[in-house]
Length: 170
Ligand code: PNS
Image (cartoon, rainbow, N blue to C red; front, top):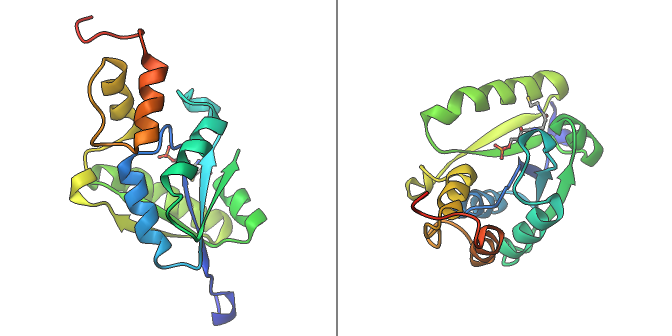
């Protein structure tokens, strides 16, 4: 790639079901380095998300409202197709631990092979290294307090979603 192809835009993709403080940390830190950061939310029917795509987008929008160079977008299918449509060549992903590395490396290599898309990794803050949307949902489902792990609107949505559905002692 020559210098004229340099990009001021990157995409930060994910399922964001729901967005956590770990995601927000990665988004904030990536946003510093690009003119624009597209946060791309995958519909991901395969994963049977807890929240509809529209709700995940609303929660992402409110969690990133303090950043002025973010656009929340949605996509279905291959990430590289979204990248092509939006003419973006850089993907940003957070790396929490070595356990993330293998699958992230596979995706990065595949995306590069498919479409010359480069992946930049942000090392997650140690504060968030054990945090995942899956764990947050599990804790919230059984009445645990996820206040430290998610933006307040997400916390509220999780409480509403699970109200009366789970108990700690089942
Ligand atoms: O938040 P997640 O679930 O860890 O994000 C994973 C995501 C959405 C980045 C990844 O699954 C993805 O890009 N899916 C789109 C389909 C695709 O392009 N698959 C091939 C990747 S090599």
